[in-house]
Length: 217
Image 1 (spheres, rainbow, N blue to C red):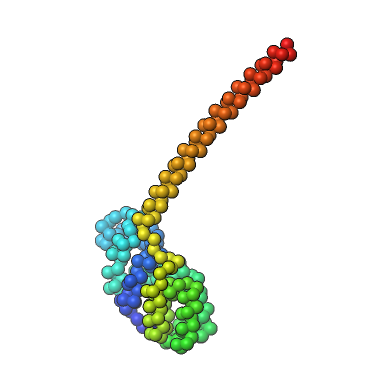
Image 2: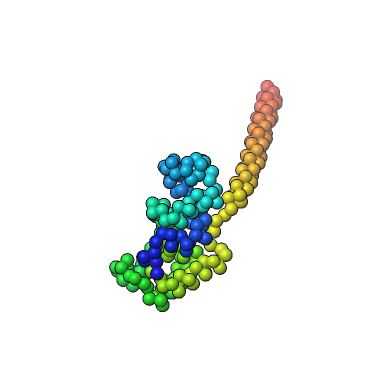
């Protein structure tokens, strides 16, 4: 189905999962693409600090260009996403080779075989990742299988890579920092108490030694 599809056509299929894709490759975008291409950063993100761009801001900046079919960006997105999901890549590669060693020449996978591959992949990697991979990598599933995968992806509630709201991450980070500070202060207090106790014991021992010396004189 997707063998001859264009990037704008791919975008129409995965646009609702673009935040999930960007969540997965956000470090590559912030610390790689945007830091290296300052002109792009200025033009599409007003020169903001890349590390402070939220997922929503990244989606807003990249979505129009992906929708237009920017080839360079598409290649970057696909390459980085696949590098983060080599397990699903190898799964598909193995299954496709069982169909045909020259699987890149296939026009469409037989329906029953395609359903089996899609089902096994969904069980291992989740419906969303299976659907995203299939679209990004132009897996030649029949339309029926794509429709089923898309429906399953929309229905799935829990995925391994479900984006965590950045506000929640910040809240947890702040709470962790407070706990660290609290325990550091507690440990510091214990250390001071330990030092005082040791000093007091040394004085007691010194006094006892003086008394013992006096008794022997």
